[in-house]
Image: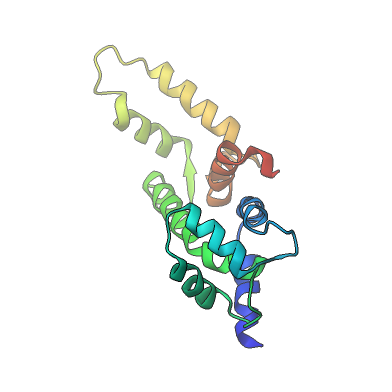
Length: 168
């Protein structure tokens, strides 16, 4: 029973947008709609991707943590969660790059400095008002609580809206 809890925890830990994406993928594999991807469904899905027959059996054995003979949605999420975890690590690294002083928030000056480094002030004819407009646009979109700083959750929400707008 403890092993069956692990996939449920992995599924619950995923962001809502990720769970929605995975529900759509799971439904595509679960062709009979019974809530489980069985060996035949997994074999069909994997063979369409060029995998061998033995790959389906091995995949089922590794993902079916509760021994039911099929992959339920929680087990499917547990298998996919490392993909989302690596995305979260990359977003955290990007956020930390912008958060130059390590305060846990990106302020207007930090963003201004990065934008200048990425292409502004070293260019001939650089227009500082372009940078200010860009800073204003980013803060208008990202600073949800209007406190003059972009927190990590606010930073993440920008990517959720850009890459998964239907998840709201």
